[in-house]
Image (cartoon, rainbow, N blue to C red; front, side, top):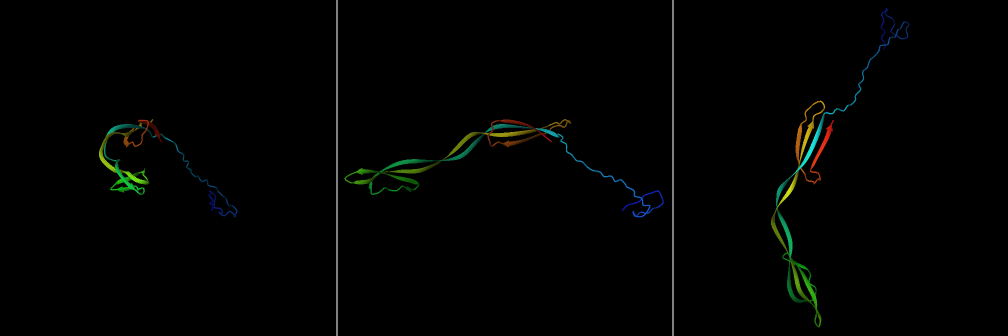
Length: 171
């Protein structure tokens, strides 16, 4: 729909009628352009220091050893006796052939193996490493003061460098 605007007496507003005058009104529109800029807000310095301290370890250790006893038997047997276990002792038969008018198996000895467990207290001093981190915010060009943050961290892995310093710029 068009609107006729004029200082003259009213004329027809229909485009097909004589005396119709069309007037164009300008329309203004705004648009926005967005862009990003990086601004340094702070600098950070992180220092890692590894300290060592001695700690005492006090634990029970369980050791197991085997005692060997050779028991002479000297009994004639018809066949090779099997390896057996009696009361926690493993018995290994040892036989030899002895020539007589006939050949016989003679049980020469038995080897008795007995497990012996010994519990003893073990105390040892070991070196344990501990890392401390100190983070310092450095002032920026606009003069803001820095802040110091710190944290402790136990080190479970071995590193070659005892101290590390790293500077970063956060934007």
